Each structure stands twice: as structure tokens, then as C-alpha cells.
Length: 306
Image (cartoon, rainbow, N blue to C red; front, side, top):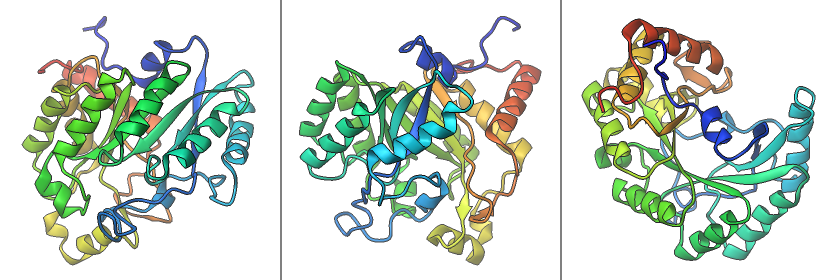
């Protein structure tokens, strides 16, 4: 067990592409979402509040270049030789006219020390024309597409007003992988109505897809969202994980997951003033250390039961 790699982390993935240190810089490029503007629905996903993951410098009145420069100032103090990935994170970063999208992506790549793009989007917002452009771009620079999967269960996707099906997710991931572009996915563990067994089954289903990276995080209820109101009205409809229970859930998920899929993170940190529950008060690195410790105790490792 001492020589067994516990799980494949994001640093291992980056080393496959870069021989220097890289850091993602988040960008809010002013995109919206088809689930907010009426194209697919109104109000967005019931858990969503983009303020929970936008750094202070991510303001839409600032250009892509200005946001990148401010982000670089923050990281360069600690790592002066750092290179950067422009992370189009806010809302749906492939939702717009293709010429506008190209302009924003290429503005980011023109910034000094930016060596690639990470583009966060919905599975139902990747046109063939845009995918063809990104495929050509990926032959010249690093490109990673990150899809919001959230759940493999259509019953859950409908309940959280996601506005797409898992079939949409599967199609987008497979089309992207066929173009030779690394594919990431985002999954929320603990969505209402999903049992422990169903969550672990997700790992097996996702392992059947050509995914390179997964981001996991706990369900966070953000003040003012529809889901937070639902929780206040009917808390019995939600599973209440404490830290230890969630750690064991993550480990069970990891053991059922294909061993070559990179796991970028286990938890997310929303600003304290916005978070309703859970109030664990743990940093990402603290939680990761707890997961590793428990995995050693359980003699667990990624893919053990795959």
C-alpha cells in the first residue's frame, strides 16, 4: 500500500502538458446562460449564484486582459516565474456568437505568460462550429473544456432546473474527446434525492465516458437561491453530511472511479457571508489532507473497486 498512488491529482495532469508551474486565472467575460435568458429557462439552476466563485477582480466592466493582469499580480508575488491558464469560468463561456467568442479567447491568449485556455460551459452549449474552431486552436496551444455535469440522473437535473439531460452531457463529452481536446467535468455530491448508492454508481457511469478530469464538491446551499429556500421549507428532503461522512462518501466515489481520471478537487469554498450550509470552515488543502489520511487508514485508492 505504501507505493500505491492514492489518486491522480491535478498537478499530475498538468505535468503531462507543461514542464513549468502553471496557475489558472478566472475570468468573467460577461457571458450569460441559456437557462437564465429564456432560451432554455429562467432563473438558472436552483443552487446557482456565480458570486460564490468569482474572485474580486472578475468584473465584467474590465476587459479580459485587465482581469488577467490583475490576477497575475496576485500570483506573481509568490511565484515570479509562473505561467497561466486563462479560465473562462463565469456562467456559460461558450454561449454567444462565434466571432465574439473567438475574440475573447484570442485576447486571453495574447496576454503575456498565458499558455492556454480552460473553458467552463454547459453540455448543451457546444456547437459543432465552435468545437471545430477549438479543435484547431488546441493544435497550437493548450485547451481544456470543462462541462457542468452536476448529476447523471435526469430526475435530479430536472429537479434542480438544469435545463439539459445526461444524454446532452454524454454527447458533448464524446464529441469533444473525438476532437482530441482534454475534457473535464464538474459533479456535485449530495444533491437532493440522491442516495449513497446512486452517487457511487455515478462514478462507474462517468468512468465509461472519455473524461480526463473530474471536479467534485459538496452540495453548498447559498443564501437567496431557490435551493436554499427549498431547504428552509423542507430540510428533511436533503441529506446532511458532516465532514467525516462526506470524506467517506468521497473515498467510496474515488474507489469506484477509473484510475486514470484526474480528480482536481473534492470540495468548494463559497464566501462565508453567502453560505447557508454546510459551515465546515475547512480550506481545500485541509480537506484534501483529511481525505488522504482516511484513505491510508482504509487502505483505499482510486479505482480499487472499479
